[in-house]
Structure formats: structure tokens, C-alpha cells
Length: 221
Ligand code: IYR
Image (cartoon, rainbow, N blue to C red; front, top):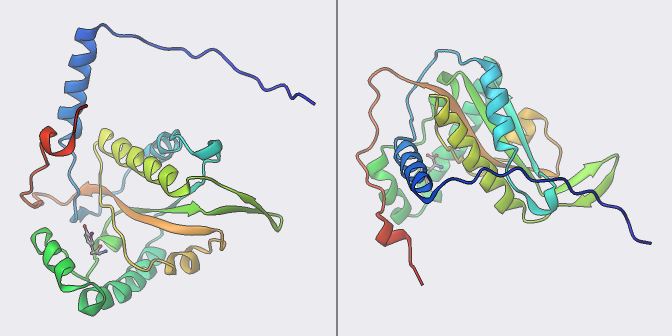
């Protein structure tokens, strides 16, 4: 039996070539001002903005439109403290033997170490989980291209955070299973990234690093 699936008109805005080029350059210049920040001010952020930021991320394309993500927003100071303790336990082991020497050397110029005070200082943490499958009333259903989908959503999240004048850190404590226990997330949800969000500490510094030029990241055929 043929099913009736509905399609609706797509509303598209088409710019002139000149306007297209202008917008692309402006957007690049704007995105190029984003920096990962590791020192946060404790100033609170308006939580209504966080809702919009998460809705923005959740507009990302996803395999079969399954939207296989969940964004956990943590502002509770006690929970942040628990996350810090658990993350630092893992990171201590990582920085003291689990990461090979080459990796530790590659990170040296960023000034990172096993200590993660930002997990308590930042006014909020967004823990993103990928749903490797769905689990509803004991029933398992499939998701597709989960890593790709959630990665795209996180990129859009970072852009939305930047657009609002907030800063973020894409933190990757490893392994991150402790997030399931602390945030009481079900087994089908796997932690993907832990992103402190807020305002930068006054006069914070960031590493003096360069982005690759077009010739290094793009090949034209
Ligand atoms: N997860 C550790 C180590 C780390 C790894 C990479 I690759 C970085 O770009 C930065 C840090 C940490 O968060 O410190």
C-alpha cells in the first residue's frame, strides 16, 4: 500500500553574486573571531539564551531526521563540582600515562593540564549525549550516522554560542562515562562533549595559534 507523505514549499532567499560574496566574507571574518576560552568568569548567563542556542543546534541535519542528541544543561553548583571531581580523576590518569608522549607534547602549547577549574567556575555546562539507539518503553529503535549528526549539531551549538557573545570550551574528558552516572542518563545515551559556557574571565589570554589558510584546507578540481 502506498503511503501519503507530505511535502511543503521551501522558502528560499536568493542573493545576487555580489551579495553572496559579501555575506560569505563577512561570515568568515565573524566566525574567525571565535576562540576557545579556558578561563571563565562566574557571571551568570541568561538561561533563555541557552534555550535558543540549543534549539539552534537542534536544527542540524541528522540521519533519517532522527535528531539523535540530547543536551543536558547543568547550572547546579553541586553537580558541577561532582563533574569536576570525576573529570579530574580521569584527566589526571590521562596526563600521567594514558596519553602517549607525542600527544602530551602536542598539547603543551595550549597550556592544558589535568586540572579543570572551569567545570566549576563557568556558570553552566552543556553535556551533549549522542543516542546510539533509542530506548522507549524497553523498545530499541535505530539511529543513523549518529556521530556525524551530533558532530554537526555541536558545531552549530558553538556557532550559536559565539553569535550571542558567549564563549565555550570543547572539553573532552576521557573516558566520560561518569556523566551518565552523575546526570542519570540511560544506557543508550553516550557522552559526546562537555562544553562549559559563559563569559571570559577579565583580560583572559588565549594561545597565539594560527588557522590554516585556504590552500592548506581546500583542494579544487
Ligand atoms: N581531554 C584533555 C586533553 C586534550 C586533548 C585535546 I586533542 C585537546 O585539543 C585539548 C585537551 C583535556 O581536555 O585537557
